[in-house]
Image (tube, rainbow, N blue to C red):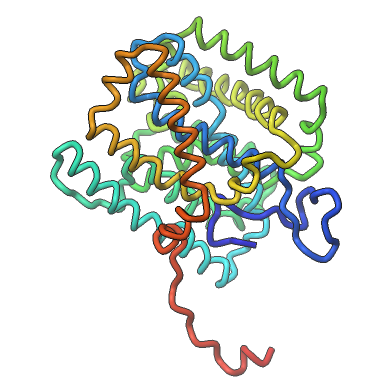
Length: 359
């Protein structure tokens, strides 16, 4: 199991096995790889669409719909595949290799890119994540806290209270703390799910209801645009920044939790259960996640987005196709081979004491 890439964790013995798999070897379940690849496509599309979505009603509504469920679903899967994390030294080492070191490397890369593209002074501040790097530091904190959530009773309601309380306070963005706390319930929910929970969504009936839920949510988003404020869904602002009273804040956040839960379930119900042309690429989602933002900034430097926006629907379609193609390419073995030292770095192996090797 590749635990050095937390977004690519293999389906282990506590998950549903692929039909016909060996009883003695771990088998990847195509359902989860399909889900991971589709989610990373939505992440890349969301970041790209926001470059041209302002003032484009239809695209802005689709962008809102995607942001309602794609990060909660992604975080939930990270929690689901963190169930075996107990804080052993080898697990912490892989966490450092697979999350913390890539965070530091790509935080540097994105800071340099912003400086080059936008003419900003180069300012490396690892405690304040740049752009999409917030997710890595959040994942590092969430996974380290896993033993805590496994030790207490009713961890999901507890983290919901923590999430809501965090939005009522004023916090700086150090270590992406607002997002770490506000998205926390989805990670802990994943920790507490079992294969039978996903089995409920892997039926034709669930798929029909899932499609209906997503369509209805899309229609609602189209009617509501330009509301709601995107910060409600990105979880990077609290009550004070959103300028609402605390009862309003709690009511909206609870409503978002409920809506996101329905749409997360709807998304998983629509995920293909069998192998597809992109199943194998779902094992390498860390690569497109970390690299696609650099492409977005390169396109910004090239002045591509105003051109695409001027093309209207044709430009939106071109951007969508281009992003999906880019995610495919960034997930392929040749790209992974080139960028492996950055995405999957390895620490020097410490010498094992003789008495430890004899055990």
